[in-house]
Length: 336
Ligand code: AHR
Image (tube, rainbow, N blue to C red; front, side):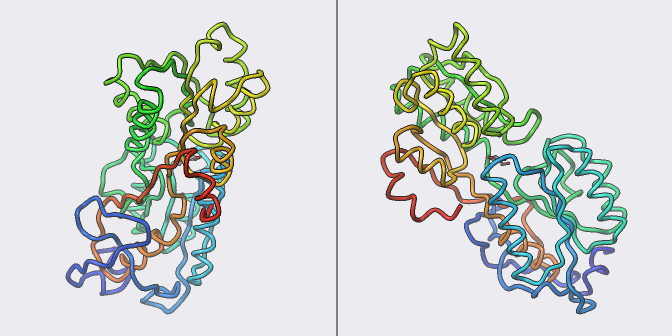
């Protein structure tokens, strides 16, 4: 009821299901939030809509594309976007969310760096009647603390990476895993999806797993140390939770005098342009797409909510999977 007051009486009207947002699917079975823009105006006042967005940081090419998508979409719609970069720290995100509450923004949106520890601050937002939209990574909180979550299915991504690798290596691989930020949803879920899928292949084992924190530099550093260790010579495949870590690993493998993509098969996740370049050079074998262009579906969802539409709790982005055989052809069409 209080949220309806913030956004005017339209929120009290019967539920309307909107047309789909670009490149996304509603997991609730209904159509995803989308449709016309309100030109960034708050319906009750005619003033610009004020949205506070707390971003994780700038750890990867994926994140840069995601930030750009959110900023450019806000600008296009005339939204007053208050954007903050938390530099990978949950405490900075919590501070940013509290400051948005103090500023009485119309909407808070965020991508949580880790899964846990969000309930108190989201309860504060709820008590202040500010709706919260979650993008990219889901926090582990009760459903009533946010309006909707828009992002990819990370478990499915890990599963796809494993299945692709199993087919490529005939079910036999000694695997090194470069995992993402500890405690983050993509690190937890991609590991689960991958591990569950290789359980069907007795010849596939993860013998090494360490975080590369989703960065190219750390991916390189961890792989360098691995290749210098006695275990290094046994590795036949590498699963990186994102492309940036895989690209760092490729440098380390080359510097160690081995051929990435041949001596060591490499599969990663994101589908950024640099990964397509590496695949077209045969250095990366496969990248499972994770679409970072979340600006349009996020602002579609905010618009729909303001008009009183009941949104699905979860909207899953549509993602593809690409490998070295088609990368050169696909590269010119890539948007990020
Ligand atoms: O949450 C999405 C993940 O975060 C991307 O896969 C990774 O590149 C990013 O840093």
